[in-house]
Image 1 (cartoon, helix red, strand yellow):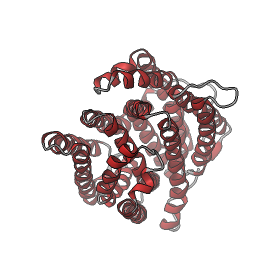
Image 2 (cartoon, helix red, strand yellow; image 1 turned 180 degrees about the vertical axis):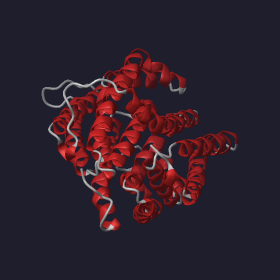
Image 3 (cartoon, helix red, strand yellow; image 1 turned 60 degrees about the horizontal axis):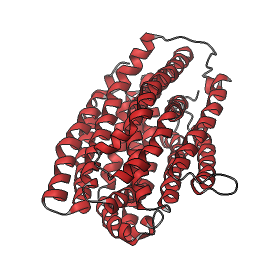
Length: 445
């Protein structure tokens, strides 16, 4: 366990943020590898995997909420120097994650195609997407437990171990992608199935390493081989994590509706939408890293009864995120085609994706505010209000505007991305107002 409640705030932010930024960039690399390699198979395969990942992200919202509850509680107990409770939270989070993966993975394996059909995709895209989803749902526990293991380490003030784990997972994933998607050497040509298998197997090996580290007492948290459910701890995880899961589910479900609007514009629009999102990830992945730093620092400092230092830590994280994401916004505005061409060579997709990336560039600073201050509030255990903010901005701003601009006014994908940019600005301002009021400083966990 690492005490981050003293010393230079800036150094502590950098200490936590740079490995988290690298970790998120590595996760982005996996997304790039999946999309770029699958994109070589054709627009239908690209659209199918894009929609399939959207479905998986919907359910990842549940487990990421558990991860947020885990990080917040572990950080509080580390700040209060209570090793036993930090360990207990870690154990209960893993059990809870396994239970959730079974509840989601089993029905998802049998009925995953229904999700893609609801989005209104063409029959061929539904068929290809279901091939991808069946494997992802079968191994969804590997995705879930990866989230939780990383959350445990981050709450303890260790962001380097998740970085090393994700480095290994991502390298293995890319190698397996190459052989399984295209059928290189003695491996069969599996197409989109190969991408799914590579994701599940690489994460499965990664979590085995993570378990070993936690069982050996890494960072002072030593898991036991045998333990049972402790409903008092589960209740705390749920109390913090459920609103965070609710926020993610609201965000993901709104994303599904938003995607349905995009799907109505055709297969090229779907592909361009996925490519533009992947291009934007060069910006928001570093933003996630600084958000993780804010979550850990706020949690530990509140646990150590240092609310003013917690606030200063959040603002220091925000300054750095604004610098990085603001710079990337400028790059998107000036050189959008260079980013887009990393994912596709299809001229029809490029033509649609480039203006989308330019539109979203102007709202990147507000996206930085959303990421970091949302992370800070969650580190304090304030997860209900972020859920409300997300619901308002997504369902009252993005969805109606996307429909009006994209469908009613006939601007298509461009109109939908204008709506996304406006919603980002609204959400960022709401998070800033909430954080400035300071009520999060007095929340008890």
